[in-house]
Length: 266
Length: 257
Image (tube, rainbow over all chains, first blue to last red; front, side):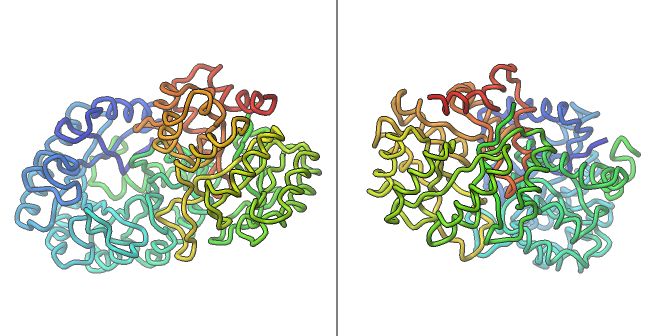
């Protein structure tokens, strides 16, 4: 059993002309790697009609509908997060309820609002109400503002996690850019923050440091935009961890934090 | 046979990296079935005279035949021709210069003279686009990344120069390859360490558009997990012949050429 907690598929309404090939490639590579379930999120139209990290309400709905359709088309392979923009709080709250009732198993917050902003509190309360984990986009050490996103770093997510200890947070793509040491220094005491190992980074020493900071019971396997790096980390972890801990990272931790019945293991 | 053209020995100055000792590198090679590795003395790349790491590198590789030394050369230092001559005498597979780390213009007069000398000596010149993701570098690690324009300028500067470029991504490779004549492009080899696999399929695209002849196996270890280069090959729909070329065959041709 292998759960990819950080996957993306692209809708036709995105800027990518090769969206169909991209999606097929993800499923094909997933078969080769042995991924049981891809847990995906769709960030609106990925920039076509509104910015990827600041999706309009209409694009939020459109993206989530695409994710739900994928889940229906691939019931044995795909689950999805509801992606919302917390700047339109009322819309976000309603969208979470709509998506949960349609079968979504988690919540994705990207970079529409900084993680420690109080505006995220009602969204987190809604996630807790439904028992949904929150996958939060993180720039591992944000030394400056980046264009086109209001990126958060690990320390800011930990502030949010401290305010909402009844919610499990998935700190996105430790290998996805920025200084992961900055993140690891922040997460250690926050038991409701899980590290998603995805991202293109395959730095020597990164996985050992993640284990030291969070332990095997707070690591989640994922790929994001590069699946070979995910497979490389999986292969390396298999040499590093005893089988029981390997199972935690590969799927048991995910099965624990997603709602009961969400994954084939349940 | 699998040869890693892109490996290092010694500590990295900007962060603690495990596995930098020769014994650890050999263990990592065993882990992923790499038969041989071309190695450079990593800390030396950050020294004022990067060639001061070469004696240790030569001595280490002398006792460990799976490791082939790729010594550093700094063409802005007066003894650079001695360094080149020693490398030729010792039969190294390539010479390494990372101009921006050394404070040199990447296609300036020093590099052009070195390019011509390497061409005349039939010694491939190896350079990295980067060693680490630019988004995570140490605040004081400010050397620029190798520009694609510099690679185009260098390969045009001498008709005998052969370049091995590591840590390049798809856009970089395409810009240089299709911005060069076929003869120029045929004198550049690219390692696969920084090229994305699925679902972006950058490596598959490059193999289809450029061909497997121009690519060599490289990992960037121990700064990067060597499993990554293997995983991206394992995810390709690539005939065994093409894979064998990438893993060792193209390098053999390069050395023999």
